[in-house]
Length: 159
Image 1 (cartoon, rainbow, N blue to C red):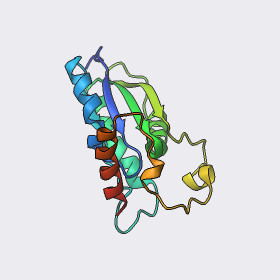
Image 2 (cartoon, rainbow, N blue to C red; image 1 turned 60 degrees about the vertical axis):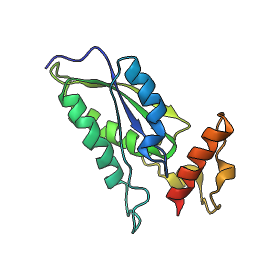
Image 3 (cartoon, helix red, strand yellow; image 1 turned 120 degrees about the vertical axis):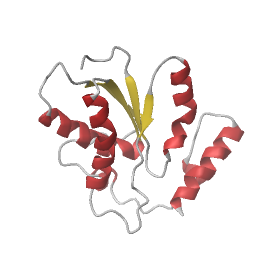
């Protein structure tokens, strides 16, 4: 299948964020003729995840079908989402030959995200993060109404 000329966006949210966090930008992109998809991460799993594999699998489960469909994909990762994104795309690079019948990852966009080097973990990049998370850590450059909407959603995920 020939590659699509219009890229598809794949959004990977940060920790404790839901995919609908990207709804406003996805709507704007759709209005401009771009397709978008989101990944749901398992960071809030109960019991907690023991390793990164479920997160990497979540990214790959969305990314592989797009590539097989001949899409050029722009992967946009926020915060913690940069870790499974980096691992997933790295694996694809190792697996994938440069065949013209498949799509490709056209760009990686990291928005205040972790970009691990080989062997890095979240702990090795930030140290012991034993600080309580609260609304004071969310510093959006948006109106108060929008900040309250997303702060509530963010904090709900922490419970």
